[in-house]
Length: 172
Length: 220
Figure 1 (cartoon, rainbow over the protein chains, first blue to last red):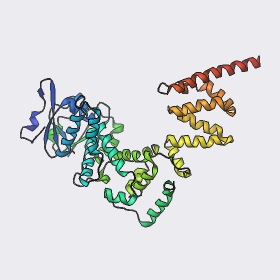
Figure 2: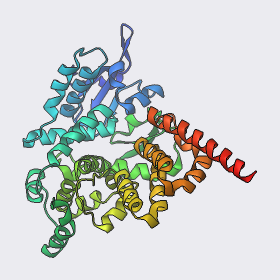
Figure 3: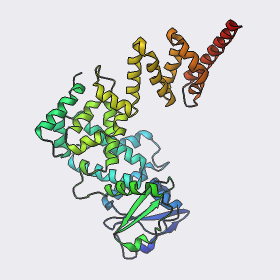
Figure 4: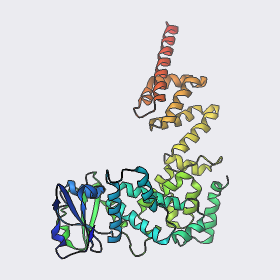
C-alpha cells in the first residue's frame, strides 16, 4: 500500500488502473500513498476535492503523519462497501480502537481523531470519539488527571468551590 | 506559509496550509462565503495538531465538545468529574451543545440554576422535567403544557403524544384543548412522528369537530 516518497512523486498524480482512478496522498512527513478514489472518497474533504476536480495531482494531507495516514487507509479499506461482508467481523475489528488504556493506544486515537476531523471521515470520527468518551466515564477527577495527563490549574479554593457546586450530582 | 481556502460540496470550508507554495497552486481557492471565513479560520487553525505531544488537551474544541456531549449523555457526574480537572476542560463542559445533550433524569433533586441552564440550551429532558413539574401545580398547568408544546414543535414524538393525550383527557385542559386543537393541529401532523401521534391527530380532530358542533348547537 505505501510506497516511499520518490523524486517524481509530485508528478505521478492521476493514474488510472482499469476503470478505477487512483489518488495520490502525501502525508506531512512526505510518505506517499496511492489509494483508489472510491475508497478515499469516504473522506468528505477528499470527496469535495474530487468533485471539484482538484484531486488531479498529489493531495497533501498536511497535518497527518504517514503512520496515522496508513491507519486511516486501513480503516477505509475495511469500510469499503463489500470489503467485509460480515458485520460482526467489522465490529470486532473496530473494537481494537475502543480501549485506550495504554499510552500508545491513546496517542494513536488522538492522532486518528485529528486526521478524521481534518479529512472529515464520519465513521472514524464517531468510533474514536466514543472511545475517548468511554474512557472518561466512570473516572474520578484525580484518576482523570492521571489518565489523560492533565495538569490542574485550579487553586485549592476554586476546586473546593467547584466540587461543592457539583456535589448534588454525586448524591444518588 | 501559504493559506488557502477550499469549499467542499457541503459548503463547509476547509483551510489548507502549505509549507510549499508550489503545491498550493493546484488548489485555486473557490467560492468562499465571507461570513463563515473567520469561523473556519479559527477552528481549522486550532485543529492543526501538535504531533509531538498529543494529549486530550491538544484536541480541537469542537472534538472535545463532541466527546463531552457523549460523556454527559450518560450522566452528568462524569461530566463534572472531567470538568473539575482543569479550567480549559471546565469551560468546554459548559458549552451549550454539551448541556443540550446532558442526561439529568437520574437525580431526584436538580439545582435550579443548572436546570435553567439546561432549559436555556434546549435540553429535552430538562424541558420534560420542568413541564411535568408545572403540570402538577394546578395554577401552572398552562405553562406546563407550553413546555410540552415546545417539545412537540421540536418533533419530539413522546411529548407530542403526551401533549395530545393531556389535551384530550384532562378536564381543566378543556379550554386549552379547544384552543390548541383548532389552531395547532399542525403539531400532530408531522411526518417523522410515530403512528401513535397520527392516531392522536385523528382523535383530536374528531373531538374538536364534535365540540365545535356542540357549541354551535348550544348557540343556536
